[in-house]
Length: 86
Image 1 (cartoon, rainbow, N blue to C red):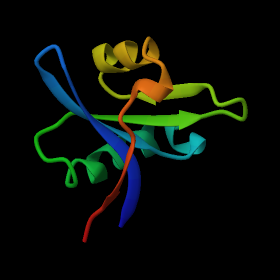
Image 2 (image 1 turned 90 degrees about the vertical axis):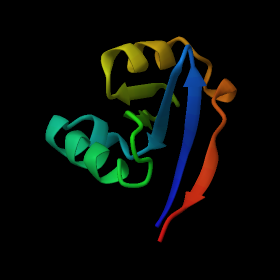
Image 3 (image 1 turned 60 degrees about the horizontal axis):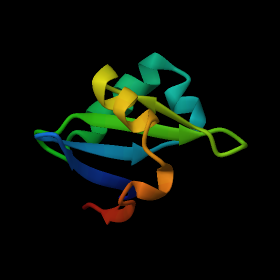
């Protein structure tokens, strides 16, 4: 499996951000299921999902404090990386 994401360490917190399609973050049930699935890739880390609309505006789904933090961070400051998992 391949995914685009980032591991962020900020203010004593380490968490993962995973890029998903917009329909995932628009549906709470799908987003919760995706977060649970991605937690296997990033054990012990809170997961925040990120999608973008047609203008590139991000939407975050996850712990409220982490989503709020990310909403104030420029997308180009997030250390995006392509991950490969078996």
